[in-house]
Image (cartoon, rainbow over all chains, first blue to last red; front, side, top):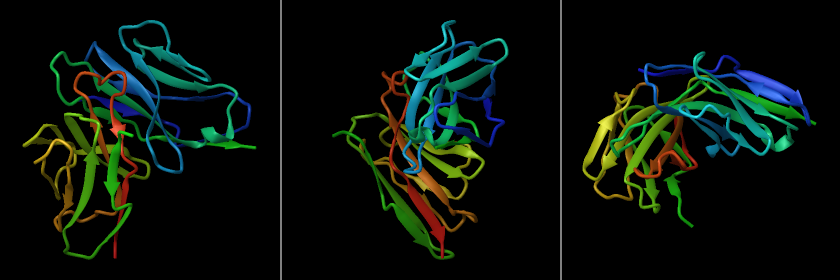
Length: 118
Length: 115
């Protein structure tokens, strides 16, 4: 079974600073996907960024980027020029790649509560 | 607009009472999921369904039941056997052919509390 671990329950930074959220995972699968979700105070789950395990290049979405280290099973999220609207819970998630169509279960980490201070 | 609707937003349960949480989607997704969210534990999978009239237990199915009679609907019943039902419940759905671009779409959740 896969497990996802986020070792930072809470983090706090000043606006415009850069912050990195850590995530490690354990799996015996070779083909999989990793995701970061954001859950603001409204509690809606928002997909921030995705990474395919077979791609060596780290994914980037505007101010959000990841550092994917497959051998170390590490998947950290970097937020540059942080904004007040980035305040949220952030969840790391794992999904096994399946060639059989069907439900694709996500395995979530415990979450990191990020606060951006003005 | 397409999306997932969960109702009610807040729900209160008395001891020994069953309650049903509603989840409806108009995204034409085949797969649907129920998660429970507790502080410090992230999201845990309760049940999921890949197709109408079929569903599988997730990691914490005890004390819960589901049905999938229509593609659009996946209601979750929290039974009296669930001893600690106070939590935030999230419903999600996914397309079986587009699961990487948007792995799962989520509803806005239902907060269940014990009276």
